[in-house]
Length: 182
Image (cartoon, rainbow, N blue to C red):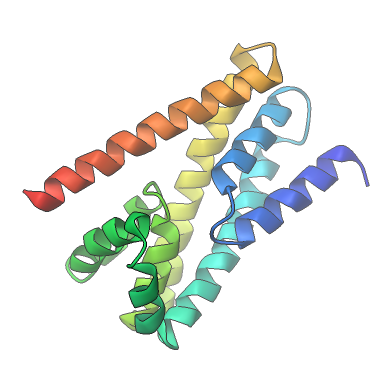
């Protein structure tokens, strides 16, 4: 197995596990793609496939005992903000909220659990999840790819891409929190 194949396998596994650093891994693989590694489309596809499988498992967990799991997660500050924001909005505008939730810290995890516990139809959840995942993984991968193209040193390109992703994610989170308290 060569380095690209190993990297893609690691990316898939990291994308499967909800609390592992998927964003960092996607950026790293996208920087590698910019430096002649695996094709960017393959990086996006592998990450999206792993996240989609993860979302479906989380959705099913949400359907069977999701309320108890969400109660436990809401004790953690970083999850509580996401749960509070998503809970009120999922019933009014479910699909767009699940798509936007991808950009929040742990938003995909919380959104999938909430959708399952609210007993959303699986087909509707799968559609919203697939759209959100595809947009989010493409956005993150394109940031990494741009960093890898613009900066000759891969480590610096990855750090720059990650910093931009963190800044944009923080701005989105702050904006959502402000709107939620208004």
